[in-house]
Amino acid sequence: MKTILKPVEIPLSERFLLKGIIIKKNGSSLAVIENIETKIEDIYQVGDIIAGGEITLIEPTRVVIKNKNEEIPLFFAYGEVSFRGLVLQSSLKENSRIIRMKEALKKVSEASSLSRVRVKPVLSSGKVDGYEISNIPPDPFFEAMGIENGDKIKMVNGALLTSIPKAFEIYRTLKPHSLVEVEIVRDGKPLTLKYKLEE
Image (cartoon, rainbow, N blue to C red; front, side, top):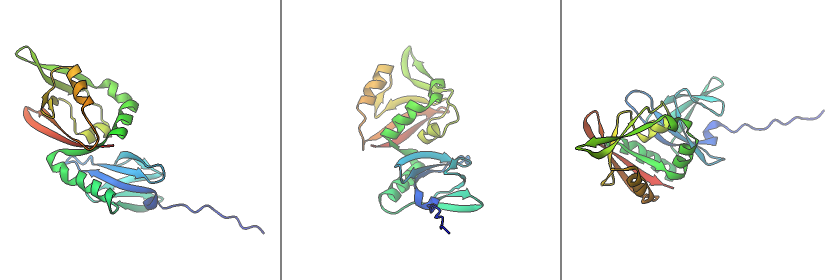
């Protein structure tokens, strides 16, 4: 009689790493989770499916995945991964976020929802005084960026956003490991969004 060996299933907690958490007051918190094998990171929210399990809870220090009636917690790992996650959490109070440039560019190129976003110039005394963003669809990518419908983007790193060519000029100056400050007006009040760029 032959013995049939079944492949050993690797636990979810050993297949994925919790890299960052974005806690939002309205409850729609987000988690950045990396597949250890593929090294691919993605953004998840409660209700999303990952490796056959459903994300049921996102808290400041952990994510809970329900799989086959078992609740599996994901915590921040030690070392660099934990550091990145903590930076993301602590800096959220200052509207600061970490952006990994390669992943962001990939998401932008794949996001069909981007075509629905509207950008129009805001005029002041006949001159362009920034750009208003509208028609942003519900999407974890936009939530992670911190941009909301009606936001008026005025300056990036101190440079006035006066035209589309100017925006591209600013974009070309962005490098990995640099800090970016985006000055916006939201509901009539000035607000600065801070980003740390990583490769």
